[in-house]
Length: 289
Image (tube, rainbow, N blue to C red):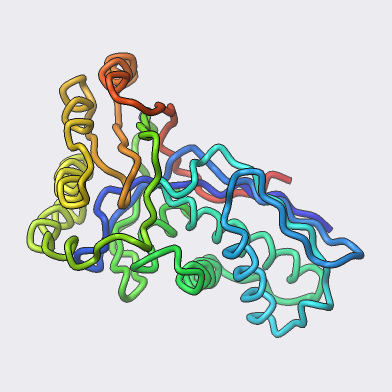
């Protein structure tokens, strides 16, 4: 048996680290997870620099959930992607969602077990990410935006979706500097100093004012984490509807009208790094074949 799954990334509207609540939206960049049964031992392969420790933990936890011995089923698990790793675009959520989704479907078929529902998959993926140490809050906002697409506004502490809807499928430009950051190494106490102002951004998100929330959140976190907020300001000055830091960096995103893409790219070309063009994704995780 085999299954191939596309699991998308997401970009930040409100980073949940400061207040435990957050918001994110799906983007049209993905990790493709390809799982096949085989007659040999289980093997993991990634051509994208994906965290194989996380892949292994996800696999262990799926087998444990179904109460099946890992020796009873050998698998080939491969990943490839156009979603940058460790850059604030929910690559860990996309990877864990994709692995859990694919493996749970394989095991359900092979052992005639009930299929996991969406929230069982998401919760297993979050538990695996926490165990691997690749997230601070559990990233329920990132995980749900990755899984369902569109925008989600969440209470990460209680893993509760407070608001969920589609967004206009506008262009999303992503600026990536020539370095990466690691969310597990971020200064949590420093970020929590922002909590009164992040609460204001979160209220905007709850009210559906996602662009304002993204701008305010991006300015707050970029200044606190030492990123250059001029990147976001230049995006806005060039016509972006919203622009700001995604996650704990290092990527900045800009939601753009179609006719402002070149203007924003020209402004960001003044900085060292690369620019990726994408779109808002409202579809979320899907089976490719």
